[in-house]
Image (tube, rainbow, N blue to C red; front, side, top):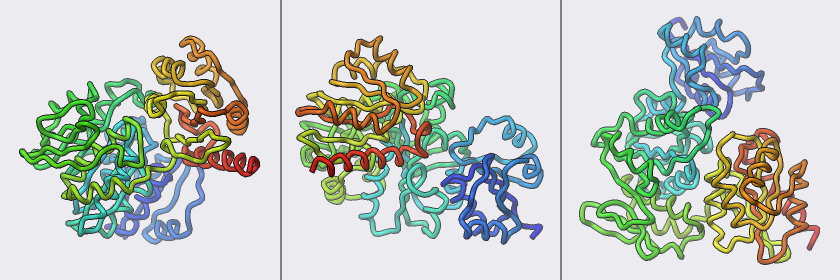
Length: 454
């Protein structure tokens, strides 16, 4: 047992537990640490104990004296003082996605950006399924990347959603295809400045060479300039400009123009998802799929069958002629702006608020003034949101105490041609375990109202 490498996995969430299980499976001694007590699955507890490891909560110094490597869950900041001390003592500190990448011999598409990551990654994952190889989807979506790459060979392809949190701790991570969708203020409570947030995002292509592909959003004024930082082969996508080379929209259709070969994929009116933000997601997915070897015909087939992802402008039902939409994934202001813009005629009853990320609210509130008939605020952020809405000239505002109060108020006021939209501009941690739980609760409340009206 003395020859087994000893590793500490910091954070016992989905990623941490997935990494711990995979490393224990490799025969390593794994100490899974979290500053809060956790109930682990019996299988994981047994696997950790088999090689002399286990779950620990409390005295982290005791574990640090025994390990050669620390693997971070996304929720653990890379610059914690205890981690800085560990690095000074020669202990390697890396992100879970770095560990997963090192243990994977196949191909990878990695996707990041402030918004649109889940939709784009899901779409790319569906496109990859059309290839005659093993495929998987992981990272910031579904299971830990460490578990998703298990059992895949050198010919396989993985679509990985990666966040700025995960990209903080990479060293050698080098996906075959790296896509950056956009950049707007988010996670300031962790990154402190936009410069640091942007630097973490750019880590996605930091180790690429000309053999790898860097895909950038030409329409994002900041991301467009990042080609100068990449040594990868550049491919831009745009919904506003017909590019001399790249992926773009023209007359409502999506095109690939690469090496003087132009292919039309489909028209936006053929899609089941809508909104300018989704057009950008589709463009990015087409670019990713193209460089992974997916044919234009299979891309078209995938796009026409794609219904979108749960919690992203997800249609729930219609009550008395008023449609209800669940956009619980909108955890920042730019996501809400994109959701509001997806309804050109306005007349929106908007439910917003939750755990405040302390991002600037001005641009969102000015659009809320133009697009909404009623703004319903809840959660920890409701007072700051209320003051910002008043300052922006939003006229109809309600502040409520509970999530159910918000849904009931929306139902009481809604009439055609209005739509009811949950798009919080906040994380969910003041009331819920995650945004998925919040979205499911919203859908349950709405469907209960539907049953009662029926």
